[in-house]
Length: 82
Image (cartoon, one colour):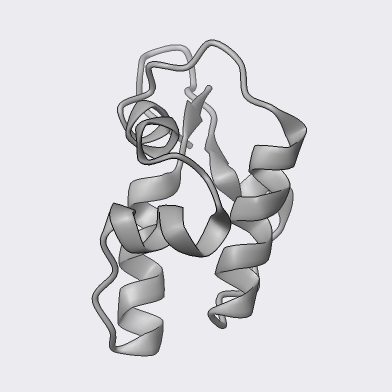
């Protein structure tokens, strides 16, 4: 299982026509930049539920109506995400 933040950020940028950087997202969510960078690089082994809630709230507030499962990509066993 991996975090799906890069594709979600790209989809958000297409949807809104606005560029976002991780610093902006960290500021908007109240999360530390390193938290986001670790998630993007899939270096986390676990994540706080509050962190997931903040990300979900951020994407929804920006107009990307996602569900909690959209924050993740699940590999098929061959390393390819579904």
